[in-house]
Amino acid sequence: MPPTERTEQSKQNNILNYCQFEYNYSEMNLGHIAKILIFIGIAIAVLGGILFLLSKVPLLGKLPGDIIIKRENFTFYFPLATSIIASIVLSIILTIILKFISR
Image (cartoon, rainbow, N blue to C red; front, side):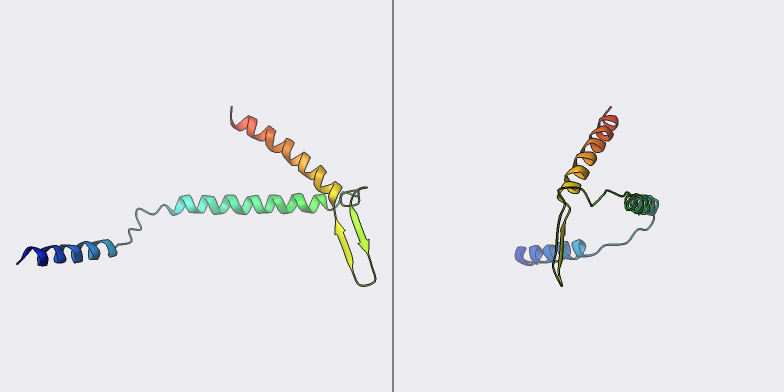
């Protein structure tokens, strides 16, 4: 076999070896994925509960500085003051959490 045929054959073998793969279910850690999915589900439930409770706060969304424009067939609502207050509160909460985590 001439050298060029040998290199062509080895290239084809390398491509075939690269393209072939086997699923090894014993190496897949499904328990880890399950824990992540459970954590995401709990986080969504907690966030839903927080949003439900925040809807009961009487001033939230009706602060001075919130922009409301009402026309006949059109209503524009931009909660500027509420957004600023929410940003400040979340920044403080996340700063406190990150300080406790980094210790």
